[in-house]
Length: 163
Image (cartoon, rainbow, N blue to C red):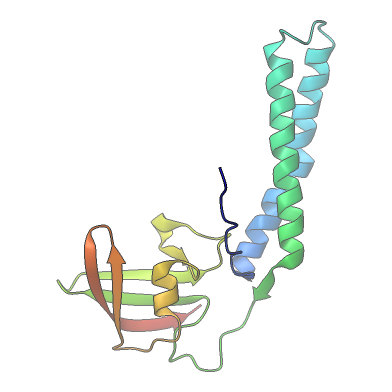
């Protein structure tokens, strides 16, 4: 079945996000991989590998680690770290924390981050998401409309801050 290629995500990342990716890469390469390699070597020494669950699982885990290490290494080379505030802090740009109010006066805050930093429980949303794209360039008192499976929702921007 043919699947159209996905549009690549934005290449922006916050300094905090870059640090987190580097820590993950370091942990995988310096801690996880050596442990798994050791356990695979020990399992291989036990003999028949075809029915050795520890060996099979260890090899699978090594492939997962190596795949993630390759991805992180490549991604860290291509991302652009945004370390400073924009000149115009009255508009919403990358790394802004935005407070919105819906029609029922319920308030919610989101921080616009790159696709590698998405964390919904913390309110970190991608600038590539529908909400993120709608927010870019808006100012305080701007009205945002968002279509969702639950229907149309309207929000008003009540605050914009940059960390």
